[in-house]
Image 1 (cartoon, helix red, strand yellow):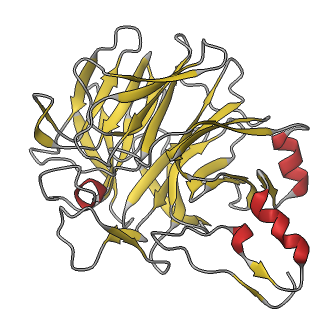
Image 2 (cartoon, helix red, strand yellow; image 1 turned 45 degrees about the horizontal axis):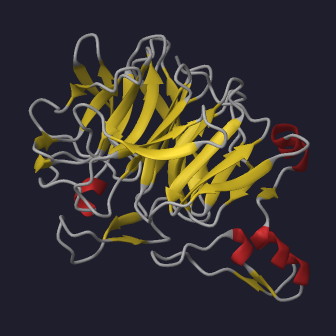
Amino acid sequence: MPYHFNRSLSTNDDITKFGDTMVGNDSSFAQVSGADFLIFDQQAALQYLGANPSYEYVFPVSQAVHEAPVYAAEQNLLFLSQLAPPPGFLPQLVINLNNDPPTLSEFLSDPPVYAPNGGTFLNGKVIWGASGGNDSIGGTEQRVSLRTLDPATNKTTVLLNNYLGYYLYSFPLNTIDDLAAHPATGQIFFTDPFYSSFNSLTDTPPRLPSASYRFDPRTGSTSLIDSTIVQPNGIAFDPTYTTLYITDSGAVSQAPGSSIYHNSTVFNALGQHAIYAFDVNPAGTSVSNKRAFYLAPDWVPDGLKVSAEGLVLTGNGRGVDIISPAGALVARVQTNYTVQNFAWTGPDLTTFWLMGQGGISRVQWNIRGQRLT
């Protein structure tokens, strides 16, 4: 990049991206900002993207956070959530992929789930991490919890709502904050930061430090797996289930001087906005050997998933970063809205849906999602 160049830091009101860099001696750099895909490793990117990758902005949505996408293959439905603002909103969203073109509509489960912020699919059911808490919303008490949703019946069940009597707290941008299931053991790994309190989604203050946990549905036990990450957010396994990735979005934290219930966070570029990798033990019950994996350049790494090829994908401001297993940026999908999360759909899992504040988009490419059953 020729001198002189300058890129402004992101703020709460203006998340910058690579294409916003001012390069005074290279007028061609202006093309970067409007591209749907950016290539950083040409050989790898062309292999994974394919000959004709496409990006399409499909549904305009509100500026509420849109999270927790989970694909139910048998029903060919993509479930996702809509969180605050405003707090206290119970209906969620579903994209019906049986229709051509797909349709987006609200749905209400029975009983309702307040503010799902992360999700996965396990044993024929959607597993959601509910991030909101209130004594009475829609006539029911809602608490941060792990919930199941049966996509065939629309019925929900609480799996977990406490740690030895303490309420759980989770992020309104990913959920419990986010979660990942180990298919061999059925155990659910999840992150639990402070964002629900920061963003007025819960009526009780945190009583536990931010941390990540493992829940065993067979025994009901909950075990700590890590307490070193400032604000643990996205969480995902690699295809071999020997590596676990967790994002740290600690750079977005409580605004100085604000109440714990005040709907106000601030971005500090000097705070943590990285992805860490951990080794998973052969039994799939604990993690070790924490190591730095990737520094998100635009914003904080939010939603996190690993493709069938082992690529690590994360929502990073106005787009999704595609990262090699070695931690190198391969390519990027650029959007005109802040991306919170994403999911693969379709029979071969090469259709990629992105969602966030202000939009839902669709990408067609060669990168395949892991098949969840």
